[in-house]
Image (cartoon, rainbow, N blue to C red; front, side, top):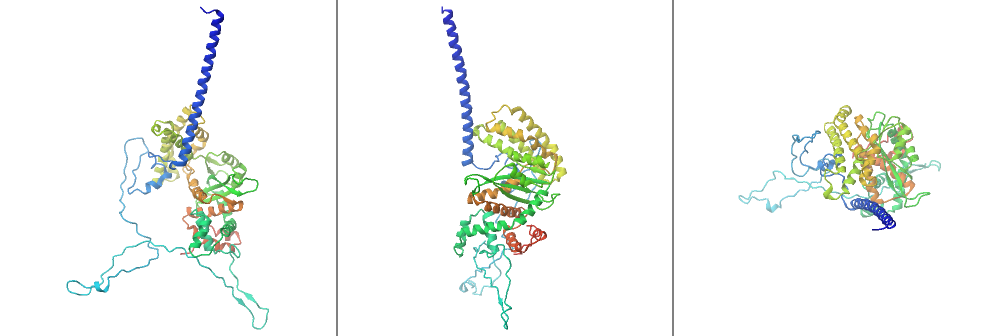
Amino acid sequence: MPTAEEFAALQQALAEATRRSESLVGELRVVRTERDLLKEQLNKFKRQLFAAKSEASARDQKDMFFNEAEDLGADAQPAEEELEDDDTVTVPAHKRAKRGRKPLDPALAREVVRHELPEAERMCPHDGATLQEIGVEASEQLDIIPQQVRVIRHERVKYACPCCDFALRLAAKPEQVIPKGLFSEGLLAWVITSKYMDGLPLYRQAALLARFGGSDISRNTMAASVVRVGQAVQPVINLLRDLVLEAPLIYGDETHIQVLKEAGKAARSKSFMWAQMTEGSGPEGTGPPIRLFAYSPSRSTEAAQRLYAGVRAGAVLITDGYEVYNQIALAHRLVHLGCWAHCRRYFHEALQALPKNKRGADQLAAQFMELIAKLYRAEAQGREHALDAHALKQLRQQHSAPVLDGIEALLLANLHAVLPASLLGKALHYLSSQWSKLKLFVDDGHHPIDNNPCENSIRPFVVGRRNWLFADTVAGANASANLYSLLQTCKVNGIDGYQYLRALLVALPRAKTADDYEALLPWRIALPST
């Protein structure tokens, strides 16, 4: 039998071993949690590098309206999915498209090439009679004539009096957007459109011009000309901004840009391109849509306040969850909507981080994505039937409001049961922080469900950024913002950007008054017929 002292020592040793065991278990739990978080982050980065960029799953690919492109390529009308959760599917009647190649545009110029039989083969083998032409069998091919570089020589005629030396006169030359500039309005429009619409860097354009027969044009000359034009169009940009700030609904977003020569900032630091867009300008929202970009060295509240100074009180602003927009909405008494596409993206990332065999419908992220898909199915139903704002509100109240209740209940039941630092935890906390804004869209048929129109207009800028990588100076970044604004506004209004820029650069030097500049807006300027 151990003595009392030995028994006490054994108890103390056992207690110490228990504490050490519990400490090791706790440390192991922390290590496993950190391991799982790191594995999740690693999978996320691997998907960003190697996986497809589409956020649509096979289940909801046809329901999310920002993936309509896949559906448009189908031969038949896709089946209409009912809003109710039943097993019936209504398949509308449709006409099958005629197979074969689509006819070429009849407005294109045509060159006729006749293929005739040789004279020796125009004899009938039976009676020797000469064959007579009875018609033609026609087929068409699409051809292209590469750009032709030419020189416009301006000759200003001089006049003089034959009787004296005091009546010398010189014919005037039309003003140019760049006085004594090397490039014509047509070439400037081509360079700008190629860079900002097609994402073609200036060095590639210089190579193309040389290939077409032009001289060796310096990239510096081209860049300086683009910046000059971007500065010259500022009065038109100011008018567009006035219209945006008067609009009843504004989409807001931003993306980064790198500016190499910027005072007080390292070359590798990030600056930002802010986007403000409307579906219809003017107080009633009935005017043409506008896409507006603005450069800023920061993403601060002060930068946003400058862009939204003068916005009409009570307007609707839809953005992602960036906190600065909350300050803007409060300062200007705006109705602030959240973006369901951003919200869905978080749950999509959380689901994709799981192994493929664990991405079933029973996963919490999948449950949220299915509920969000129901919201979008209601929106698709409204677009399909071209519902007005009043009818769309009724549809949302009937079908989307109960879905929102289900999302909120699922959120409250799981918000504090998931590790906040995990991808699913971040998705839940984003949903929680944005909930008051996300649920507002059902209250008004004019409210959009997401900020996708703004993201879609930013996409050409992002694609172009992969090619030209950075802006050299602040002036270049501002010029790029102005030119992107004009071309994207043209695009959303169905206006040819090249033709608009060419007409604008011809007319811009003659504009003197506010009315003159009003006439240069994309939907008001007179474009050439050819």
